[in-house]
Amino acid sequence: MTDKPDKARLKPKKPSRNKSAIRIPISLHFYAVEIVIIILAVFIINIYIQSIFKDYIYDQCDSRLENAVDSTKSLSQALPLQLNTSDGNADDTIRAHLLQSIATSDNLSNQANIALYTLDKKTGKFTVLWPNAYYSVSYTNTSIRVINKVIDEGGYESLNKTQTIDLDGSIVYYRTVGFKSKEPDPVDPDKNDVPAADLNSEANIDELFSNYYLCVYVNSASYYSFMATNSLALLQAALLAIIIAGVLSIVMTYPLIFSTQKLSRFAKRIAKSDFKPLKGHIVSKELSELGDVMNQMAYKLEESDIEQKTFFQNASHELRTPLMSIQGYAEGLKYGVFESDEDRNNAIDVIIDETGRLSGLVENLLSISKMDMSKSGNYEVKKQTINVRKICDTIIDRVRGNFIHEDKAIINDIKIKNAYIYGNENDLIRCLENIFSNCLRYCKTAVTLRCYKNNTDDTVVFEISDDGPGIAPEVADHLFERFSKGSDGKHGIGLALALAIAEEHGGTVKAHNKETGGACFEIIIPCVKRRDQLSKMNNDSAT
Figure 1: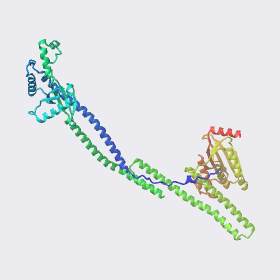
Figure 2: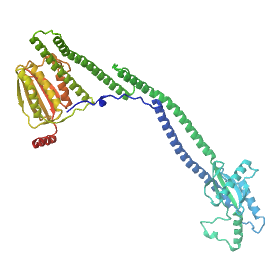
Figure 3: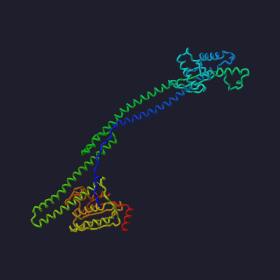
Figure 4: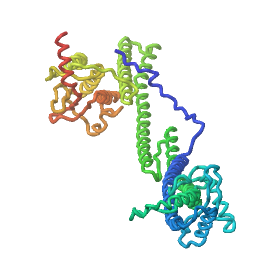
């Protein structure tokens, strides 16, 4: 199984600049939103006001026409019934009677204009009787134009009904009133009976009056002018609101722009490895929180930068020491410095020991670098379900030779059978091996390995303890830091690597001194789920 990192994946991507040709300031974004809101509000309000005004104009004009028509009832009904239809001057008599009634009437409403005209339905020709040029030229001309429009649209056919015509862009509301010689009496129907001798006379009178029409009209231009004035006032208010919105946008967005530029300059400083914290007040709550987060990020980056530099300094120092020894003894062998065979053999042994020390240091550095990359998401450690008992047997076999060489004992106290953890077997063995190596260095006679399952939090605990002097107080707080060494320590990577591997597997490493003396290390790794354990046990039994 190889754990080589993917170079293409580890290589960071160079950030690219935004190639957008147009960059709109944030104040213009706010201003554009405000303008859209103002325009929509004015548009909706204007439509609503116009609909209300149109209904209001219609009601007002209809009411005025109603009052005017009511005032003409006396005129239309006050007709002489004694007109002699056989007289050739009957039409002139009717015309003179109507004109005199209009000119002398006190009951006609002044809320509407009145126009009296005759219409020849066969030819379509009409004659305006009232008003005349002697009364008012402009009034007469307007009445002629109104009647002409009414006749063209056939409005005279619908009596006592409010209608509209368009007169040079102005809406004119009007009603047409007809004439009868006699209105039916709704109270006494018998009075409606006409003597046979009068039938011919009344029929002729109605025929004469059928060509006479009274047009009552109201020009709504003044109302629509008032509505246009209101729309203009609303437009002016909208323009004023847009100007005020522009000023407010600049005033309100300036702190936001200033804070954003400040954070941008801070980010550029961080990119240049300048991790000084951001100072000063930021108005926006969200940007203030972003500033706090960036300060924390700068602190973490500075801490990581210091750790990295310290790591490389310590690593170079630890690598230089065995390399210098190897180089010195190798050069002594080359130039014949060692004369006796015993000295040469001792030199060779030193070279071999330092080479082994250097090889172990490099492996630990590579492993801890791999754990760091995995922690940052740039590397994935390959894992599988592992039998805990198998790990215990493997680690004992690995370290037994060192204990025999040092004339020390291993006490095996494994109290676990069917338990499984999910992880990388090589990394877990390296973790245990480093702790065994540390305990072997300080123990007097023996190192004890206990392995048991903690059912409380469903974890497996590897407990490795020695009978040595224990952990010194001055080392206890920095025990798992990189390149932190005790009095007999080698290079200070082993315990830091053990902790990194345990954390990669979701666990941890704890250390304390036993009451009976000696140091005790607990490597705690979570178990896999029971379902996965049963599946693994079945597979093991089948094989």
